[in-house]
Image 1 (cartoon, one colour):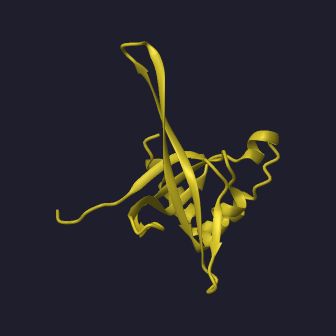
Image 2 (image 1 turned 60 degrees about the horizontal axis):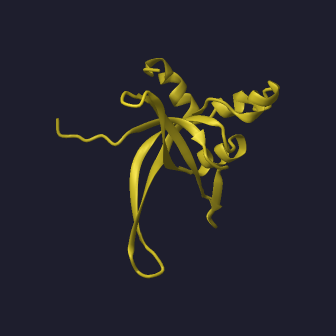
Length: 145
Protein backbone atom coordinates (compact mmCIF):
# COMPACT_ATOMS: atom_id res chain seq x y z
CA UNK A 1 0.00 0.00 0.00
CA UNK A 2 1.57 3.29 -1.05
CA UNK A 3 -0.96 5.80 0.37
CA UNK A 4 -0.90 7.69 3.63
CA UNK A 5 -3.61 8.79 6.01
CA UNK A 6 -3.98 11.97 8.06
CA UNK A 7 -7.24 11.64 10.01
CA UNK A 8 -8.11 12.73 13.53
CA UNK A 9 -11.27 12.02 15.55
CA UNK A 10 -11.81 13.88 18.82
CA UNK A 11 -14.58 14.20 21.38
CA UNK A 12 -14.08 17.00 23.83
CA UNK A 13 -15.28 20.23 25.35
CA UNK A 14 -14.74 23.75 24.00
CA UNK A 15 -12.25 25.70 26.09
CA UNK A 16 -13.57 29.00 24.75
CA UNK A 17 -16.21 30.37 22.39
CA UNK A 18 -15.62 30.07 18.64
CA UNK A 19 -13.67 33.09 17.34
CA UNK A 20 -14.32 34.08 13.71
CA UNK A 21 -12.10 36.08 11.37
CA UNK A 22 -13.91 37.32 8.27
CA UNK A 23 -12.23 38.11 4.96
CA UNK A 24 -13.12 40.77 2.37
CA UNK A 25 -14.11 38.09 -0.17
CA UNK A 26 -16.85 36.86 2.18
CA UNK A 27 -15.01 33.81 3.47
CA UNK A 28 -14.18 33.24 7.10
CA UNK A 29 -12.14 31.06 9.41
CA UNK A 30 -13.20 30.01 12.90
CA UNK A 31 -10.99 28.78 15.72
CA UNK A 32 -11.49 27.34 19.18
CA UNK A 33 -9.54 25.26 21.70
CA UNK A 34 -10.86 21.77 22.41
CA UNK A 35 -10.00 19.85 25.59
CA UNK A 36 -9.84 16.08 25.69
CA UNK A 37 -8.94 14.18 28.83
CA UNK A 38 -7.94 10.74 29.96
CA UNK A 39 -8.23 9.41 33.47
CA UNK A 40 -6.44 6.40 34.89
CA UNK A 41 -5.46 4.89 38.22
CA UNK A 42 -1.80 5.19 39.25
CA UNK A 43 -0.97 1.64 40.38
CA UNK A 44 1.83 2.78 42.71
CA UNK A 45 -0.13 5.47 44.59
CA UNK A 46 -3.71 4.23 43.99
CA UNK A 47 -4.57 7.81 43.05
CA UNK A 48 -6.75 8.79 40.13
CA UNK A 49 -4.74 10.76 37.54
CA UNK A 50 -6.35 12.97 34.92
CA UNK A 51 -4.48 14.42 31.94
CA UNK A 52 -5.95 17.13 29.72
CA UNK A 53 -4.78 17.62 26.15
CA UNK A 54 -5.59 20.84 24.27
CA UNK A 55 -6.23 20.89 20.51
CA UNK A 56 -6.47 23.96 18.25
CA UNK A 57 -9.52 23.46 16.02
CA UNK A 58 -9.85 25.37 12.72
CA UNK A 59 -13.03 25.53 10.62
CA UNK A 60 -13.74 27.38 7.41
CA UNK A 61 -16.68 29.25 5.92
CA UNK A 62 -20.15 27.72 6.56
CA UNK A 63 -18.83 25.21 9.12
CA UNK A 64 -17.25 28.07 11.09
CA UNK A 65 -20.47 30.10 10.98
CA UNK A 66 -22.59 27.14 12.19
CA UNK A 67 -20.22 26.44 15.08
CA UNK A 68 -20.04 30.11 16.04
CA UNK A 69 -23.84 30.27 16.16
CA UNK A 70 -24.54 27.08 18.12
CA UNK A 71 -21.43 26.28 20.19
CA UNK A 72 -20.00 28.01 23.24
CA UNK A 73 -17.41 27.38 25.92
CA UNK A 74 -18.02 24.09 27.73
CA UNK A 75 -20.10 22.43 24.99
CA UNK A 76 -19.23 18.86 23.99
CA UNK A 77 -18.54 18.20 20.31
CA UNK A 78 -17.23 15.46 18.02
CA UNK A 79 -14.59 16.72 15.58
CA UNK A 80 -13.10 14.93 12.61
CA UNK A 81 -10.30 16.41 10.55
CA UNK A 82 -6.65 16.49 9.57
CA UNK A 83 -3.53 17.53 11.49
CA UNK A 84 -1.82 20.56 9.98
CA UNK A 85 1.34 22.24 11.26
CA UNK A 86 1.85 25.86 10.27
CA UNK A 87 5.23 27.59 10.34
CA UNK A 88 5.42 31.32 11.02
CA UNK A 89 7.86 33.91 12.32
CA UNK A 90 7.47 35.87 15.53
CA UNK A 91 8.34 39.56 16.01
CA UNK A 92 12.03 38.68 16.50
CA UNK A 93 12.22 36.61 13.31
CA UNK A 94 12.27 33.26 15.12
CA UNK A 95 10.54 30.32 13.47
CA UNK A 96 7.45 29.22 15.35
CA UNK A 97 5.15 26.28 14.74
CA UNK A 98 1.47 25.77 15.46
CA UNK A 99 -0.25 22.40 15.20
CA UNK A 100 -3.96 22.55 14.37
CA UNK A 101 -6.82 20.23 13.53
CA UNK A 102 -8.46 21.33 10.27
CA UNK A 103 -12.04 20.23 10.88
CA UNK A 104 -13.79 18.43 8.01
CA UNK A 105 -16.83 17.08 9.93
CA UNK A 106 -18.47 17.77 13.28
CA UNK A 107 -21.41 16.78 15.42
CA UNK A 108 -22.77 18.67 18.43
CA UNK A 109 -23.02 16.28 21.39
CA UNK A 110 -24.34 18.71 23.99
CA UNK A 111 -24.85 22.40 24.51
CA UNK A 112 -25.59 24.57 27.51
CA UNK A 113 -29.18 25.29 26.40
CA UNK A 114 -30.06 21.59 26.45
CA UNK A 115 -28.25 20.92 29.71
CA UNK A 116 -29.44 23.96 31.68
CA UNK A 117 -33.15 24.11 30.89
CA UNK A 118 -34.05 21.21 28.60
CA UNK A 119 -35.84 23.70 26.33
CA UNK A 120 -33.84 22.53 23.34
CA UNK A 121 -33.33 26.02 21.91
CA UNK A 122 -30.98 24.77 19.19
CA UNK A 123 -32.95 23.98 16.02
CA UNK A 124 -31.53 20.54 15.22
CA UNK A 125 -32.99 20.47 11.72
CA UNK A 126 -30.91 23.48 10.70
CA UNK A 127 -27.72 22.09 12.19
CA UNK A 128 -28.24 18.58 10.84
CA UNK A 129 -28.91 19.85 7.32
CA UNK A 130 -25.26 20.89 7.04
CA UNK A 131 -23.04 18.69 4.90
CA UNK A 132 -20.69 18.19 7.85
CA UNK A 133 -23.38 16.79 10.14
CA UNK A 134 -25.09 14.64 7.50
CA UNK A 135 -21.87 12.93 6.47
CA UNK A 136 -21.06 12.07 10.07
CA UNK A 137 -24.60 10.96 10.92
CA UNK A 138 -24.43 8.36 8.17
CA UNK A 139 -21.25 6.91 9.68
CA UNK A 140 -22.11 7.17 13.40
CA UNK A 141 -22.99 3.48 13.75
CA UNK A 142 -19.37 2.58 12.96
CA UNK A 143 -17.96 4.56 15.92
CA UNK A 144 -16.34 2.34 18.58
CA UNK A 145 -17.83 4.32 21.49
